[in-house]
Amino acid sequence: MYDIAALKAALEGLAIEDNPQIVRQKSRDFFWYSPVLKRQLEDVTADIVVNAKSEADVIRVLAACHDLDIPVTTRGAGTGNYGQAMPLSGGVVLNLAEMNGVIEIGAGFVRAQAGAIMSAIDDAVRPSGQELRMHPSTYRTATIGGFVAGGSGGVGSINWGGLRDFGNIIELKVVTMEAEPRVLTLAGAELHKVSHAYGTNGIITEVTVPLTAAYDWVDVLVSFSDFAGAAQYADALANQDGILTKEIAPIGAPLPHDYFLRHRKFVRADQSVCAVMVAPFAMDAFAAFTGRHDEAAIVYRSDTATAEESKGLPPVYELTWNHTTLRGLRVDPSITYLQVLYPFPDHVQKASRLAELFGDEVPGHLEFVRFDGKITCFGLPIVRYTSEERLNEIIRIHEDMGCPIFNPHRYTLEEGGMKQTDAVQLAFKREADPKGLLNPGKMIAWENPDFDFASEQTYLFPGLGR
Image (cartoon, rainbow, N blue to C red; front, side):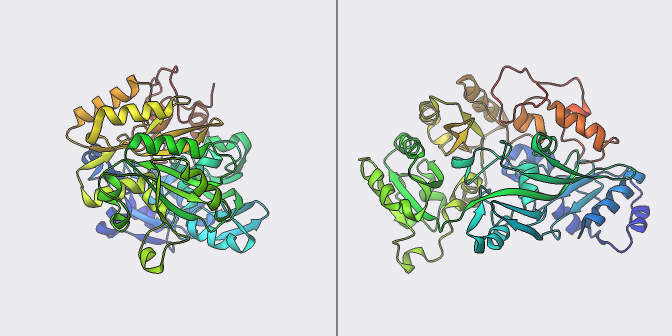
């Protein structure tokens, strides 16, 4: 289909992998979280993998592939879970894992290459008393470039909101896919051209993000007799302005007992929990606040646990966000999940009502965040999957109750989060990728310019062309 031999000749000297098994492995992300995507994408693979070690390598690959009309899909660590990094049209997977340097650390910011692992960035900045504002639950494996290109928020979003909120990215360096690729530096409003665009309209090679004060966060599990109680507690805690937390996640029974195998000794099967990360100086206040809730019981806190109790335990953030789903899949491979927004101000009531409605078919899991300046919650509820038809019915019921679904069973930008064409990203793709060779198939508006969603809905990422 493509002239791979000519491409190899043009890229002589670069690290190229063409072993079909390894290429297939590097062509996959965590798409298998979704039984729908697993069926659709199982056989997707690139033709070759090219490992870039520098910006010059990236430019060389993009120029050669542009000349030969070969598509390019960028890969970081492959921790995305709705097919963002799957090469739908084959061609080249451009692996940036070796572009992993931390370039500059300053007061309130860090600049790193796109392939830098997020935990490694924190290791580098910690001597300055700083840390990243937010990170995904895949902190120890995810790259900063992949987070910007495919993520939306995570641990830390309770304080800092979403990744695309102004101020959460300072600057990006991006390479275009043209006959003579350009290296662009984007800041301010221009960042929205490529953030959360899945690498469809430029290759991010450097990222500058803000830092905040670092703490040795205390991991805490608080148990409750029911999910509604955990959700109400979490909302009240999130609104305690004087108690510094980094993560607040209510998770409904029986998930904590069934899925968190190393923490099972602290939780009964009938207990819901709230997983929390608390700054050490706030622990006395946190304990006092929790003590005012009759149903709440602190069953684990890392700062007072014995060495034996804490031995082998993963950090609390690896029980939250999509690590909840990942741990569940290891126990029961038939489950899947949804991504839900419960809009302010009746978010707790909506989440509790839906959890009660579905019962054990869709056990509750909330992540409290700051969204448009208000404390609210996203949901990543577990779904005990039976059929695609029932999954779509569950989605419809959520949306009929005013809770938008950002569908993790779709691999396109518009269906997964935007829910409408992003005019700015589309326009930038026309400029930066005129042949449409970057991660093809992920931007519906490029493939079908007449496609769009109705605009009178709540969007995770509002279109920036309005």
